[in-house]
Length: 273
Image 1 (tube, rainbow, N blue to C red):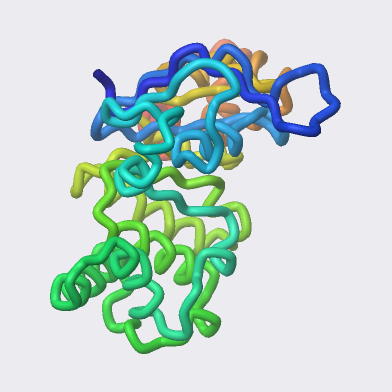
Image 2: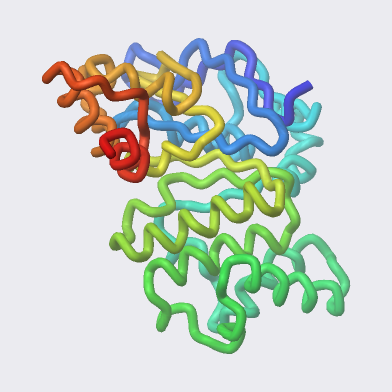
């Protein structure tokens, strides 16, 4: 069984007068070690799906299994939340303490981890996100990118198998986005943590193992980045941008210049030289 398996899931918010569910007919498998990126316009259902993975919500119909545990079973909720950590869009909503080290320790303390082990986890987690030496800093004095990395460290300290990131770079400047994405890629490639990354920045999807495209509560495409970003017209039809390098390559093809499938500026330069 996959680390995350979603079978025939619909979700309808209570007191929602819309005839259309927030999610419908969702089938998806995410393997251990995957870097999966979910893209879609506002209202496509991305954040609702993220909350289902962490049992902040449960399906209206269908089933979700996390490492074999059914999210519909209330007895599994705590176990699943230990396996799937979540990072939200606004780090200020996730930072709870007056010092960085206390914030990172908050999760392990709630798990009942012994104090000496918590100390090790705090230091190790901050090192993994490039924030060693910031233990005594006040979170409100950090930059946006630094705050988000501390929030990620707080999740890492609970040693999850998977981290779900719900648009963690949406409120950051370009430097902050770069810092966070380098951290996320390191955790996946070097530490083997499964990543489910939700974003509206298409450049953040080019290094994924799989890209899932959502529209109006449904998954309409899934595949490798090269497979997905070949669908230029379909993506634009649902108001999604495409990576700049992909758009330039598409323009050159229209001008009868032979360009292979590329995703990054570096690949584009190499193809032209």
